[in-house]
Amino acid sequence: CCVLQLDIRRGGCLSCVETAELARRAGAVCVPHNWASRVGFLMCLQLASGLAGIPLAEDDRSQCDVVVEEVYAFHDGFYSVGDGPGLGIRVN
Figure (tube, helix red, strand yellow):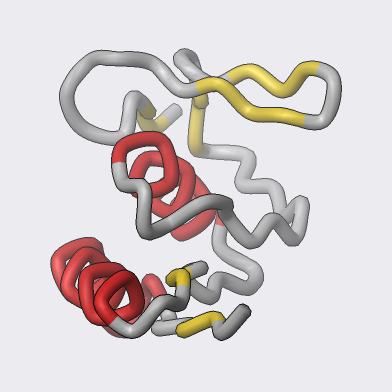
């Protein structure tokens, strides 16, 4: 399987959606690259939860003390995301 990795913080969500569509047409998948950014990881989770062309999120387990994640849960090796608008975070 071929994997396309556009950096989520460089390309943003819309470019990753476009990359996922390109990957799908080529028989590949898109897994947006993220490193050392909790917000970037949450962006990847949101995309993976709603797009078949993005099957998973790259998780580096970084933390950010000011980001409060109220709609995300990690259980049995999988993340769940909320169904509200936006990233579902607030800044403390």
